[in-house]
Amino acid sequence: MPKPFLILQLRPETEASDDEFAALLRKGGLRRDQAHRVRLDREALPAGLDLSDYAGVIVGGGPGCVSDAPGDKSPEEAHIEAACLSLMPEITDRDIPFMGCCYGIGILAHHLGAEVSKARYGEPVGAVTCRVVGDDPLLDGLPGVFEAFVGHKEAVQHLPLGAVHLLESGPCPFQMIRHGRNVYATQFHPEADAGVFETRIRIYKDRGYFPPETADDLIAMCRTADVTVPERILRNFVARYG
Image (cartoon, rainbow, N blue to C red; front, top):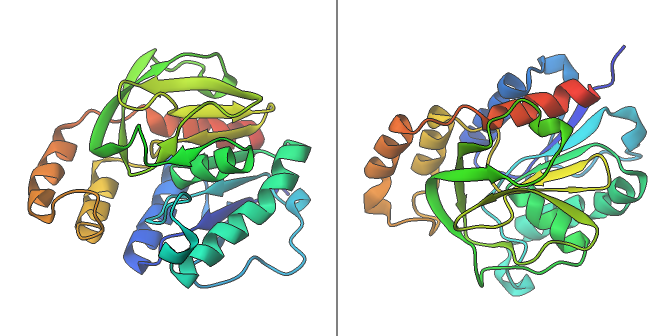
């Protein structure tokens, strides 16, 4: 029987977490029994977790920031970050298939010793044009330029040592990177379509990503954006390692 994917979620809002999980399954082409879901906002990593039992690891996004000072992180955010970081040495040392979405690129880059901060490269909520700058099996068949949904306060400030640069945008140079052969991370949300982003805009309108009074305009913008390509990266990841 094929191994399931371990899906780690970081969103403390149940509606956002459930919607993200459904999107990861749908866009990745996964059945519910092909995923082991762990909500790190409310539970610890399973005791005796063996990553060899999984086809790969997928980390979703969340409102926390790796670069926030320890005193500015809630106990929940600190627990989530520590849990994710605890897995990264094994993932990178063994080159275990990994896909970090948004928050995940901060976790990977921080683990690899790169600067993750709010100094530069943050992007407002919305669609951004991404460009392919490197060759990779997950990008096979994709156009060289496409739109993706983003919204982040912090960003990777320089390419981590030993990482490969795969995608960039005008505002943010590091939209997708790879470490080794199998460890990936994206700054954009590969699982997000207009409906998914509309839900997040509504839920996170008071979290400092944008002025709350602009939420309706952002939702309208998302509905007109042509964002269909990024999900193919997620599906390619699942197809390659599942």
